[in-house]
Length: 535
Ligand SMILES: O=C(O)CC[C@@H](O)C(=O)O
Ligand SMILES: [Zn+2]
Image (tube, rainbow, N blue to C red; front, top):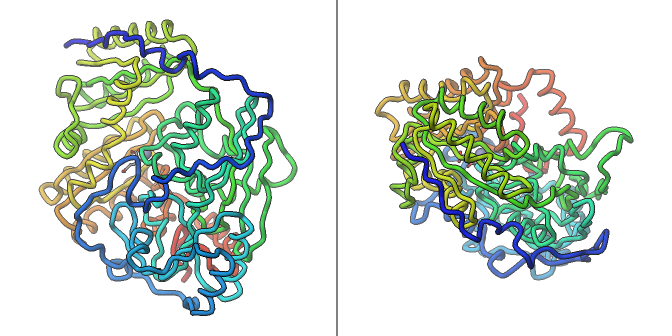
């Protein structure tokens, strides 16, 4: 039972090292600053902050695995291709090999058969594309970094793929308010590097940061690792520019903290997964870059102790607590086996990652150390290690952030992203493990405990309807009984659209359908996603 307090190396002041603190004029506008470097022009499968399961067998076409009928949209003709070529010259992709990566999702679980990918650079181009598709009744699949986990980012049939990858310009950054305005295709990690140089951070961080686009993050209302500290994108996104189904450009790109003039239309598009409009630009509030970041990785003897550790951290770390993540021992087993990561503490049934972000390095480290010592002495924690330097912080975060990658190397993965009252969070994992027995290879639980968000994942050698039948609707009914959410942060996409009713009443679903009809009367935007098919 040792608490390994990592030697405080000089790099612990990484966040405040002299040299990065620069002075900028108030309201610095950077014009259109390109964030795109060549590696970002790789296919979306190439990056997610980590690699996809490679060498996997051919992915089945979506309609072969799922019961879904193509709706009566037009098919892309030679005339359409010629019109697209006039709108985005040289940026119309029809080569089947190049299209493959845009037709298949990151998990390699669903596959469309789109024949064309368009790569606009401006909102005006997006508008012209949609105007054409609307007139021609062509279905469109808006696509960001293609890192989604619910099949929302790839076509189901032959929808035209509209990629935001070349819309990667920063439009302005205000260095007093921290308000960033950028195009939708900026990669999250690049934006974070950009604002960090200016003493701010993005209010959002995800395992997929190296590939995901800010537009996709907003469209899916992504949660991620900084949610506990900075809250939902519904609070930090200040304005949006959106192109509607008929090509109308809706400019709500305001950069105001307060604006009570009428309905807050941007909220409609946040989390609508490209079904109501295509987000082309985002105005977002970036918090100041914390001067001191510390991370502790702890082993806990049981889930009750994980909960008490959380209460203790909330009570004693207060305003500097910025993340509280947990994972079970099977997760640790998988990251060791598939990614060769090292467990830095003694084997435990549960592990917890606690991060603090504050303004005083010495004070924060002292505070965290004393909390950890107290928890160790009381038996809440059986072992722990703490990092104050960036390299070690990243090593500890990798154990948690890379679980998704480890799971994808373990076989076929069934994913559930559930919100529950925090005290019941792990009961679902225990129940499902008992229910499946040897039919599953692994049943793991991990996630954003501080936000009441469980990632329940089940792996098997191969996809099986029988296993799926044992999991669903069991997991959804279980969740609904607790008044939880069947999608905490990943959205509904294609795979979860039919379970919306477990978390929303019929009246809410009806209103959602009506809003869809109002904004997209022909239903061309990301069809077969988010809302259940109408009877
Ligand atoms: O793969 C998953 O189920 C979760 C992915 C992501 O939301 C995470 O928190 O790591
Ligand atoms: Zn998550």
